[in-house]
Structures are given as C-alpha cells and as structure tokens.
Image (cartoon, rainbow, N blue to C red):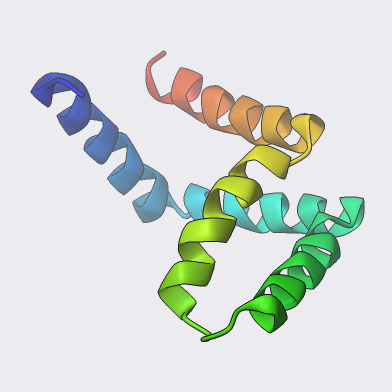
Length: 94
C-alpha cells in the first residue's frame, strides 16, 4: 500500500477501535459465522488437521488453515460485514 493509503487505513482502524464500532462489527461477524455453522465446521476441520499432523505445530497449523478460513467465509456474511464497514465510513466522511 502507498504510504498515504496505509496511513489512512491505520487512522480508520484506530477510529473504529476508539468508537467501539470495531467490537460491534466483530461481534456481529462472529454471531453470523456461528449462525451459518461456519465456526463449528472450521473447528472440526482444524481438529482433524491437527490429528493428522505427525508433529503438532501451531505455526504450521495456522499457516495451513488461515487461507482456508479466509476463502470459506460465506459470501453473505462477508458482504454484510463489508456493508457495515462501508456504512460506518460513509458516516465518517459526510
């Protein structure tokens, strides 16, 4: 990211945290993942992957499962969270 964009990103992130909006969005995101069954499914996949490892390594498990986690989030949930962030940003820049 260019420096100006990166700086703006950090400022927005800080503002989200300071206003408590980040916690609200995060809680809503977690609830939606729970409702869709994503959390339970991913937990099961993680346990299975950990059992299959010869030597259990948190870092290896994290490296292997992070991309899977990001790509399997239901599109409707992803869109809802993005819409909440966009709505917040629009209010901030009115």
